[in-house]
Image (cartoon, rainbow, N blue to C red):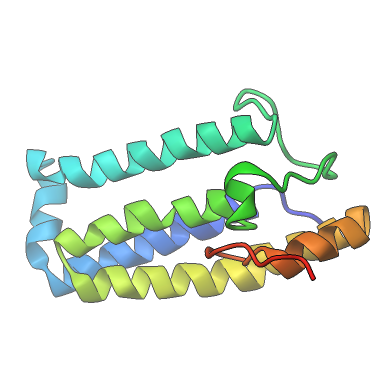
Length: 157
């Protein structure tokens, strides 16, 4: 059974846990959140950059933000940013998580590790199974030359 909002739930749950871990390590973050300090603007900016990247990447995929992108995949996008990462939208979420390092490097690292582990297990692997089923050899060829998260594409043999 597919759960269409799983990636968003996993991402924001990891963000929330990373914020809590960062605040436990750097109590001034909690104070700044409670007082809505303007010093939170870099964190808000990182979230805005993430949202802008998602909009751009969805455009690259031929999707509109106003249209639901859930359901069976219709096309396999392998060019542009998808030549360097099979999951550039999910990779973009590293930006707001990394911004927590302004307060707590351990909190940010915890959030990043938790996020990549949870996304790989709960979201990416099931999506890859769906893509392999829908696109067969085309997906297998793309997966063989394109890293799951980020890197240089490998040349086809």
